[in-house]
Amino acid sequence: MSKIAVAVLNRKGGVGKTTVAVILAQIALVRHNKVLAVDLDPSGNFSDALGFMKNYFKDSLRIKKTLEDSDADAPEEWIVIDCPPNLEDDSKHAIDFADIVVVPVRPDFFSLSNLGVMYSTAKKSGKEKAQLPLVKIGYDTSAMSKIANQIISERDYPVAEDLPLHKRIPFNVTSGLVWSTGLIANSRRPYEKLYDKILKAVEKLNAGIADINEVWTDRKEEEIDNADI
Image 1 (cartoon, rainbow, N blue to C red):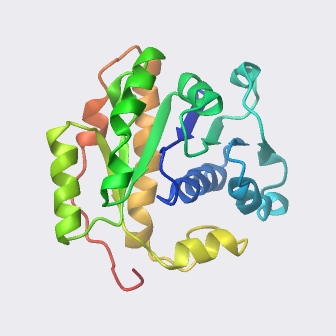
Image 2 (cartoon, rainbow, N blue to C red):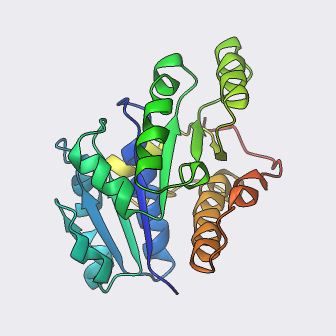
């Protein structure tokens, strides 16, 4: 398998960025990949959450606080980068380095207000818009979610996946458990689908296929258990 570098970034904090980064890293580990986790956020929550799992995954997980160009030659199959909520040098470097930049957004204006600047910054790094797919978190039938969906549609932002809010996931992540502990298959599936789509998108990029929009638009509706939302 080719090396995959994924950054998780939004200029707004509190949107689930670190949780998404932890989940992607842990899915890669559970699927028997070696993972390099790069924690660029001064809060250190990404390092802390994965540090709980270090003994469990042993030599498959390496955690560091800086991103270097030489990491492109690291032995790990997956590089997952948790970015700070800004577009300063570390975040710009991550955008330039990553194959895919996952952008978590909540159904509020603040999650969406700075996306234009982010896409402009990515374009300067040679990234196509489709390489920065949104991940909608906690969108429902509320009026605010409908307005946010309308904004996303009007601005033609690529959307990789809709992730429900599960109370168990933050508990698992902060308690040293694998993120999916206690979740039934239907509840885990949207997160696993995101991982699988990133895999497919990077495969297309490596094959020289610039247009990866079809990877994100293949979003078939699934039954999701809401019992623990």
